[in-house]
Structure formats: C-alpha cells, structure tokens
Length: 196
Image (cartoon, rainbow, N blue to C red; front, side, top):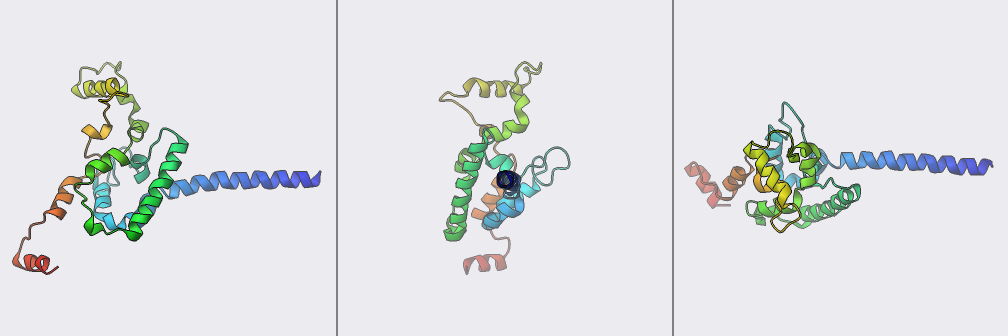
C-alpha cells in the first residue's frame, strides 16, 4: 500500500510540474527576449513593434501584445503549440543558415501577413467587433466587419490584415522601403555605401 501511495504521489507531483512548467515555458518563449534571440537579424522589424503606440510596447493605454499574441493562432491549444513549434524550428534554421541581406523584406510583407498573422489572434481581443446587432451597424467600420462575417468560409474570405495592414508594427513599410531604396544624404554616406 505504501508503494502505491508513493507512486501516486510521484505521478501527481510530476504531472503538476509538467503542466505548470510547460505553461511557463510556453509563456517565456512567446515574448520579446526569447523571440528576439532568433529575430535579432531582423531587429529593425521588431523595433517597429516596440514603437507601436496601439498594440506595441509603447502603448500607454490598452493592451500591450507580445509576439505570439498576433503571430500564433488562438483557435485551439494544439494548433497554437504545433504552429509555435513549427515556426520555432523554421526561424532557428533561418537564423543559423540564412543571410538577412539576401532577403527581400519589403517584398515578403504580403507573405508574412498571409501566413504569420492569424484572425483568431485578432478576434481573441476584438470578438465584439463582429457583432452586427450592437446598434452601431451604420458606422462604415462595422459595415466592413459585417462583410468579413458574410465572406467567411467562401472564396472571397478576408483576413483582418487585408484591411489592417499596419497593425502592430508602426511605420514598418516606410522603414523597409528606406532600407531597400536608401538614398545617401551626404557625399561621405554615398562613398561609404559605394565601397560596401
């Protein structure tokens, strides 16, 4: 009997450690310091999130989101963890073997928007926006959100980021454009770029 109690106690303790430890690991691996370990080479993009005053770290009011709040799906725990693992492996591989200078960051935005932002992430906080019976349906924004609901599941389905292209990363487009098509502001700067 004592052996059974010991086994049950050890199993219970191991289960609790696994559950709470696993939850802590998922939390720690979903915020700036951890994500920045692999995304250091695209740090300018991360900086645009830190500068964002609506959803980024510079928000004075409302919700300050973490990387995984937008860049992982929130419709199921299994989907969340699977996508987190898949993206983590892909990002680790890119960090080790990739060359950020060869990447077309500006051209990659649409792919990133389509594949690495999830409506379930937006709707986790903005679920009420889809309620068409809230008395505000006359507002143009609500009329567009009604279209989102109407087209959902059809070939014309929309994503939140189809309209909200700049959410989460303040001035990302202009920053990427400036990096790609930078014009020197002085003779010294022109010489320096010419000799790269």
